[in-house]
Length: 448
Image 1 (tube, rainbow, N blue to C red):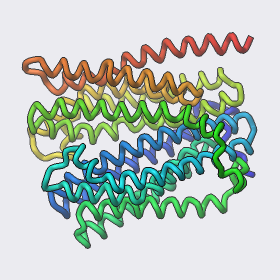
Image 2: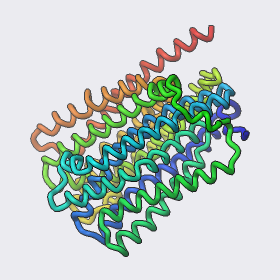
Image 3: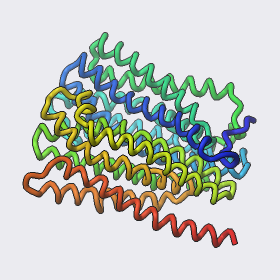
């Protein structure tokens, strides 16, 4: 049995940064993963195929968001058991998680494969792209088991403090996906179906290679075949921790879709500008997103080991370093948004519209440096119900109403509408500060 990356001892900042950097690279590759699909389809296929990939990938991304959120329950529980020095219990948790997600994979495959046409209709896929959208969803859904296994493996390794293995799996998947896109779309001219086939192939090969690597590695937990069973108490704990995160992430993604719908009513230039800006925002938000995932694993181990003060120090170290990155990215987004937008668009008016919207996200770069670290801290400490609550308040109590009311004003700009996002983040930070104060006082009382 191998000793894991122990976050409960040693200097906090070097360990946190050492874990966060591979997570950042993995998130970057995931962002490139989706960008390459659209880039290759856009170069070698029709506009209908581009629309199909764009719509279909949004649906699959929403599904993946839910799976990743639920799998966070495994990350937190495994991290806590590793911190408690109970490796066999960590193996039991992983075994129960495998059994649970196997059932989810079967249900999801059946429902989405046969419901692909209905999902295309719900997303109002254009008539000329409807059949390709349905085909894209159906092919990706047929490989749902690999998509789920891919994310469960990542959650398991983050729980034991290993962020390099998930980086390796996403690097393998990204490389195969690019090769598959070039073969199926550029060479065979399969359009959206080719992009979907490349995605499934990439996930499948990545999972299989990961399993082969795992079989040859010494792991910091013990798991027998008999551990892969439906242990209802453990599954209940995974769902109790993971479902609030999954629901929050899903509803937050819906809130951004609502804002896009609001902007669409302002005309094609505004719509295209926000579309370009949202692509860029995926990359701009990589650093706080990496800290959020890393903080969850770091805090989970220290909470499990009973080292709450160390977990709190990790939070403050994370915020301090994340803010530095946020200031740099915020400066780039606010003052050089036009240059950034020109990487994805050629139309001058679209570039200006995207740059205007990015100015609002420049403010959010700094705010999310605080917010995402807090979210990671609360996830790692098992307070996922609060994470869900503050996320829903931010999305539906602030972001959507502010964007809608702002859009009703005469002469409104995309910057003004975009301000709904940092306003939401500010409210969520206030909620997090209040809850952290309560959490800190509770821990002090328990320590006495």
